[in-house]
Each structure stands twice: as structure tokens, then as C-alpha cells.
Amino acid sequence: MFRSLFVVSVVILFASLSWGGWFEDAVKGATENLGNRAVHETGDAVYDGAKSNIVSPKKDRSRKNEETSGNKSREDVNRPSVKSQDQKNVSKTVANEDAGISTENEKIYSKYDFIPGDKVIFFDDFSDTDEGEFPRKWTLKGPAGGGNALEVVTYNDRKFLRTRPGKDRQDNSREYIRLSNKGDLPEKFTLEFDAYLGTTEGGSVIFYVPSFINDESSIAYHNSSPNGSLLFTGEIGSSESSNTNINMLDNRVHHIAISVNGTFTKAYVDNIRVVNDPDAITRPIKYVGILMGNITNEQSENIMITNVRLAEGGKDIASALDTDGKIITHGILFDTGSDKIKPESQPTLKSILALLENDPALKFSIEGHTDNQGGKGINQPLSERRATAVKNWMTGKGIDSARLKCKGLGDTKPLSDNKSAEGRANNRRVEFIKF
Image 1: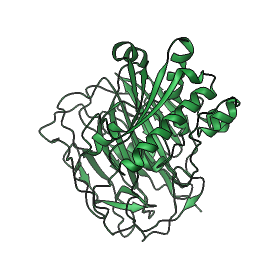
Image 2 (image 1 turned 45 degrees about the vertical axis):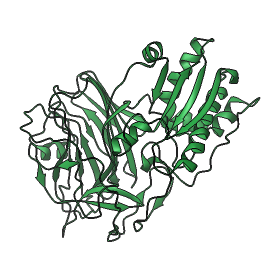
Image 3 (image 1 turned 90 degrees about the vertical axis):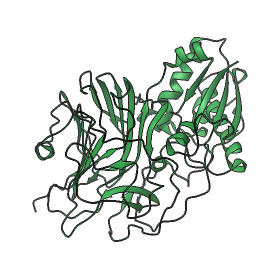
Image 4 (image 1 turned 45 degrees about the horizontal axis):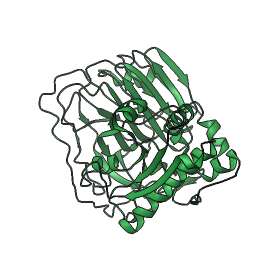
């Protein structure tokens, strides 16, 4: 039987066009309300990105009263916590696995070098939007904006933005992030989001990072990436000048990570680098939008995304250490409510490790920080265990324990206001203070 290609198109639009007053300040401080309308009308299973098994949709439940760090869909609350005491006189392998990164995962992520931007411009996991509603931090006003209706749904205990299923399919819709800046995005920035990439029988999802695409149908059908755009599907990742084959049609939610420096762009699907192009992006970048849709008659209810994070790139860590005497990192990620380090934290950890290896006199106080979600009784000890886990990872790589101290500060020293999702994302961090 001919396999139909249902295409879930998620397009990141960086348009070199006039703003025309379409982008106002992002709505902040919205009252959290998870609502009662869960996605249970579909029988399709969706992968919880942190787990190795397929799970079925569940009804919405109240958020757990615990601080989260990193993207929620990549965290697994069922994994055991690491040991909080300092690991001494143990092999590097044992210490490393106790810190939450197995030897196998180290190998898998050995070529992954993505480091998130350190100042969040925009963040939305849709937790502040009621079930069935359109998120207030997004708009349909923009080039070719609008289309099929959109709604926030709960799927596998997480909020997603999806196109609303019709009788036969989910049609295209293009929506934009509300941004306050009126000019180009920062010279260095990162964009991340989680998305369902489809199945071998249901087709694949498509993502773009273009100037502006006038003919999305030709792009979708031909699997090309014209007009300076980036393209991601469950089968390929490409820019206008490059193409990488992948195999992600596995009924799972995957993480898309894009790093931009001027026009030079790197992009990843999970741990696989799919784009490395010096001229992939066209400047100036004034719009950030998403196209989600289905261009076949195949019915699907899984055209959806979540955890959209846009962040400005920061100083080089060596420069930050020289000028500020400390390094603030947002790239060390943990499982929810746990001190288990996630493998995608390796690029940030390795950059700090290199400084310690190159300067035997360098010493760090490792300080864990959380947002204000969960309360001090949870956040302070959790932040301390996480700082200890980072220390254990470093000592497992051969760094003398005497060169590292640990401290957990919880939510006592925020960098930003905890009233907004962007502020809370900025406050979840690990700092390395020179002493």
C-alpha cells in the first residue's frame, strides 16, 4: 500500500521585513492554570523524550511542586538521584556514571557541542495557557500569518501547542512569537524547542529557520530548504547548501537546537548535528514564527511543539572569568527534581573542565541556583545536590577535589524577576565562582 506523507510542518521564520507594529511586548506574569481539557481523543502514543518507551496520552494533572531546570520534556522524574557526597578514590567511569552521565551517553554525545544562550529572550512551555486556548505570548499577525486554528493541549503530562484536528486532517497554520525588539536579533543567539517528528506510517515533521518562505508547499514536497532556510524533518536536516540524513520517524518527541553567530549556523536534532553552514541565515532577523501543518489527507492529531526557548548568546567563558571572576551557565541540565545530570550538558561541562585542566591554580566554588517554584524546603537542598553532582563529574575527570567547593543557594539570588517564564528560565543556572 502506498505510504502517504502526512507532513507536520514547523517553520521557524526569520523574516527580513518591516515590523509594522505587529510585535508587542511578550505577556508576562500570566496566572498559571493547567485547565481540565486533556488530549484523550486520539489513541496515538507519544514518546516522553527522556524515556525509552512509548507512552499513551494521559489526562492533565496539577504540576508537581518542584523546581524544574532545563526543558521539562527532556526530564525524567522516575530516574534515581545521584549520590550527593563527594566521590573519592573511585574510577573515572564510576564517578561519571554516578553523576548521571553514563559512558554510553558520553560516547553518544561526544560530537554534540551545542551550548544554550545565557540570557533568555523568550520562553514558553504553555503552562500558563488554559486547555483549548491560544497562547497569549504568540500572535497570528505577521507575513502570511494565520490559517488553521491552534490550541494548547496536555499530552503525556506536558503542555503542547498544536493545530486543531479537523474531520480529515490538521491544516497549516503560521503563528509568531511576540517580541519587543524592533531591529535584528542579537548577533549570537540560540533557539530550541521540542517537537513530535512523526512515524514511519504517518509521515514526518518539518522545521525551518528561513528569511521568509513564500511557497511552503514546494518546500514540504521537495524536502529542500530554499531562501536561506534551515529544514528539519524526521528524515533529514538541511540548509540551502547542506543536507544530512537522519532516522527520527520513531513516534517520539525530539529536541531541536539551533545556534546562530551572525550568519553562521549549527543545528541539531537531539545529539546529531544536521547543519553546519557559514551562510545559512539571512540578516536582519526580525520575525520568529512557526508553521505547523499537514499537506496530505492523512489524519493525525500530533502536529505540536513545546518548550520554545530563544536566548541571546553570552561572553566566551574565558572572557567572562577574566572580567567577572565567575562563569554563569544555563547549559547544565538535570532531570526534574533530581541531581542527575543530563548528557546534553557535556559541552558546557567540558568547557569548564578545559579551563581547570589548562590552569592548575584555578579553583571554583560551584553554586546551584533555582527559580522560586517549589519552595525553599525543596529548592535549597536540590540546588546543593546539583552543585555536588557537577563537582563529582569534574573529579571523575581527574580534577583534584580540593580545587572545588559546592554551595546550593536555591532561589535566594535571582538574576531576573521570577514573575515571568523568561525570568525563571534565567534564574535556573549553575555558577562557577573563582576563589
